[in-house]
Length: 546
Image (cartoon, rainbow, N blue to C red):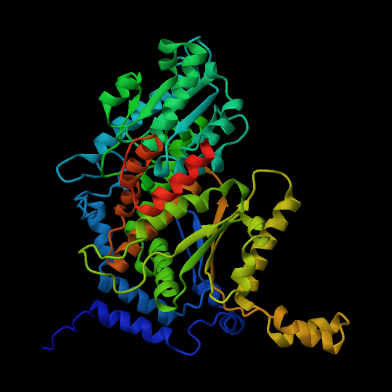
């Protein structure tokens, strides 16, 4: 009896991908689109209500098969399953990464010996009761006035996800207006403050430890505003916290029943489904927040059960490996063609760059290939009049994610048609480009003389073969937004396994925090030894203070 063939090693599987990427037409897109009318159907997948179209990348069926082989060799599915089991996949901090538990039914997830689902649903129940009491006026301001506005004070994952989701989902007539205060620069507070009435403003302080420097500086600033307007004791009626540090929240004046916690197996950039999302529920209503969780849960179920060739997060991650590692593209643009998703690129910057910006493996060895690319973006046609010049004609291709919404929530049909036409035109222009001969023909048809055609032809040629993906939502509602964000969360987990890095820690943010202390002490006038260039810059600052 013959022995079964051994599974390929990761090195062998990667060599198969690399060999395909070394082919003469590995990056070709235009010719594939022109000669293969069935390409779109074969490279389009659906899951959790979303559509993913990879046909405008240079991926072939052979390349995709090789990438999925690499995924198997790297144990991507095993990493996914370990994450779902509550194992400490965040190896450096010896923690689970159980953001899926935040939107799952009771009894679904454990973190080691802990029943994670029970903890989640206890918190969700408290959040729901609080939200509904605020909306009904049972919880009101010190003078008995209903709360009309909520200010969420937090930074990083305590700001970007909720701020993005609220902007995407809030519609006129929803229960409350939400405002987000993150930057320690007090100009941020000065921009928000004039639109608020302290008598009808509820303030959430979002900090797990209740020690985050920027958040606590802003919290004291806003509490001072409440105290001046309402008085010391009355100000406390306007405060709640998203934290686990009950002694610190109590010292700040927040009652224990207004503190909503979350566990250390919830990373900040994955936390908008937890108590950190309370501002979303307050602004948009509890049913909307539940639907947001439901959409994410639908993507979780797809991620856990869909075959690899149909699995949207895995396919999106495989395309990124192809672009970053096989073809050497170091950046990606995210272009949501919906103004309500204007903050999606900022949320994905943290989600992806904080997770995947690693230079050592989970075992501490130097990585063998480039990891997280730079992520940037702007909404829709704004981007076309900003950085798209570089994406069309720059020296290094920049893959693009086009996020489209089929049905708008307004009745300006002509505007929406123009929006979608612009998006698809950009995707086609990136893929097809324009040869120099095509540019010459177009200019001759426009009546330009031969000398002018010769002069302008190199400038008006587009290289094409610039990759993009299309992610299509039926409409922008809580369910589709939840699925979209969870799609990117799971893509990050897949890439962590592909690259052998830990996508759930973020040691790179710590050094700057540590160095802030002595520099702040020096700015306050204390005698502190500083690096000479830092001391010199501080000297220039002090000179301008005089």
